Image (cartoon, rainbow, N blue to C red; front, side):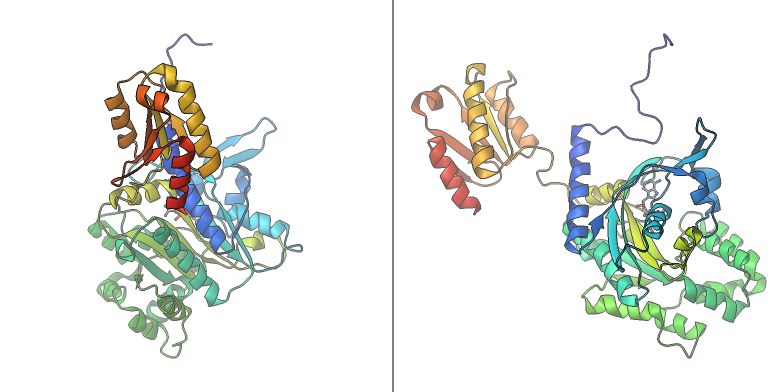
Length: 435
Ligand code: HAM
């Protein structure tokens, strides 16, 4: 017991969700799940607790994540437990565990909360929710196209224009071949270190980045810098003049065929996780307001291997709620009525509260709109102002005249329109409007 007055602040880097934040969160989750389901993805979930070993095992390990970013503790039974920092090892574990029963390919999605001990900043917190969509059991390049098309559709379904964002793609195998063929670097550990440096390109100053990269190629540094700026065709040719059938080009062309043109090749795109083996991609806001990737993913061929048996190829992405909300706010895409009821019934005096409740109930039951009653004791003008500020769509005022005449007016706040009559009549007019 402590007598100290407790702080009302949440723990550093996590958020409280007051109703207006919760409404935004729910809206983001609903667009995420509706879109994933429209592509035939099935939802799964798991616990936030995982054995710490899951993140240390070969194939999954990511030094920065394990050593600096995980919340790990020892439980009362002396087991080392980690609050999951990402979902991919978990879903690989679940897929591997049911490999005999599953009919591949499977398309799965989830919206887990994840914990990373990071320095809180714009776009990065210590707890975030992350939509994960993954396809397991095929390494056909069309699955790469499909998963990136799904990521693209997610943003369109929030009302974004394809001009608002950019899909950056690269391929891990291509980069491995590039460093082997052109710079004779084949040592796996060195390649990992280079990948780690490339991943920091946008996170550190240019001079620091150049210095880090120079260590690996010394006097050929300028050449490497130029190589990394090449366009996709020239880069692929440089790596392997024979191999014009590169997966990366097939993926880019496949996306183009689907009408997705905002795809750019980025040779310095590396992704921080060691498990990626093929296509990798990230989506960025192009407004300049949000520097962090909104979404990142790729193909990982070996992650399921650590559970024994043959590896099952997977490809997927994670899309965070913090960066998503920043993007929506930057592009003014959160203006729709997501925090308020559709209809606000406004009694002018508390004696009309119950009658107003009956009206709200009739609307809910007969039209399907959400409806609530403003039972505060504020003045009428203030109540109408509040409804408008909260982006309520419709109001009905219940005052002396309405109560006596039983004639009410349903007023549209976003259009110059209204219906007047008995409640039954205005419900009928309203329903024929919305049908
Ligand atoms: P990631 O790049 O670490 O990938 O995270 C994906 C997205 O989650 C980021 O682009 C960002 O939107 C969000 N995110 C990550 N960390 C934070 C944080 N500390 N605060 C707020 N948002 C964050 C992965 O986690 C992979 N496991 C994704 C994946 C799924 N790959 C294949 N399947």
